[in-house]
Length: 489
Image 1 (cartoon, rainbow, N blue to C red):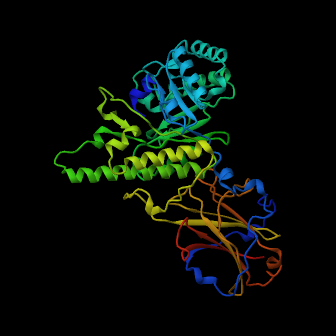
Image 2: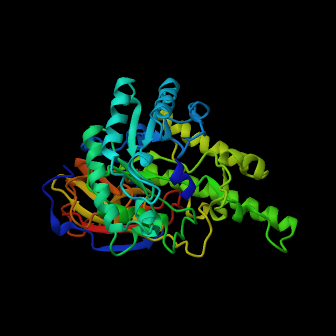
Image 3: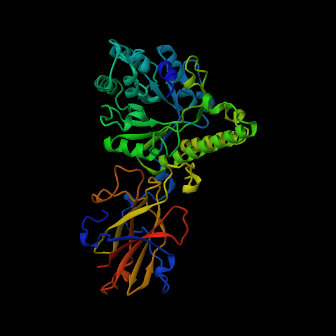
């Protein structure tokens, strides 16, 4: 984040392991086209608790949306943004000011993130000696004003590890120790309130990286290409975080909704037409990043909040590298594409606030063009075919690993398909899946299950019978898919 802002602000339990997948290859859709295959019963009778069947169940984990620093110092956008958001970001020192901002949030019908950085850290990111007394006084005031229920999350400090690394007064090791103590105190004073952090991307792939103790909601910020955040895609950073998270912790998405002046300004020797074209590409790429981030957050049930950075921004005097403008100035600064970006952003916010989600369903070609962008590559495995004909599998696209795919079961006897199911999304989350299942260290829900109808299953005593699961890319051509094959019995 901008430093100035920081400072002031059963899948059946019994499986037949011999039936696991043995082969993956791309084939045309006519490979098993013979005959008139029957259509299956889908998920009927297959453990409803494990299935994310409709939008509310599948995407309802994404509960909060609100802009970073939306109610910080003299900035106050809570009421203005309340029709689109259900979260505002309060960062002030004075208890009176904090009470006023959280009261405004309550009156507007939104929750508040309470940033307590000015109460627990000094300007050199050292723990204040009296932080406990300051937190306790703040807690008592919020209790007295009956505002505790309006607080959705406590935020001790922004980008703690990178700030510790750049400070002469502390270190990453010391920051870890101090955060463990502070977060424990916050949990005691504000029981039931999640403690959150947004990490700087540069820390996440360090060999010594670990998530400081005591955090419940975790995110990261990186304001570069989807595919080139220090040479790695955004999804790799989320996967790295998941490697260090426990099952109770949740993710926050922090999409980029601001522009640095140094990137926006006209360059030396750049013609007017070239400058306008570059601005148009800039805002188009920002919109692709936004939609991509939204897909990521919708695709994984461990996401809880969508925190765009940011709505409005003032000049950062003395820090030209961090000076820029927020999305509130996109329409005026980007005559072509700026207004569309704002409309898209507010539509996403409304969806999350209302619980009426709409998945963007982007093709790879609709994402940001970049030389780091990989080709589509599909992988998967049939995990088991149970004794009663329940097929369990997974499949994913490694280029867009968060996206669910469409999968289809085909039963083949002697080279002829006798049964073909409908194509269905891969969004089964199953606690009984074996080690080859990519959960939990990858984004998305990639599992698939299908119950082969009993009349079909009972015919599969032929020695040449097989079960095939086809893996289709999201919105991919119907004649291109991955085939996973296993013996039927």
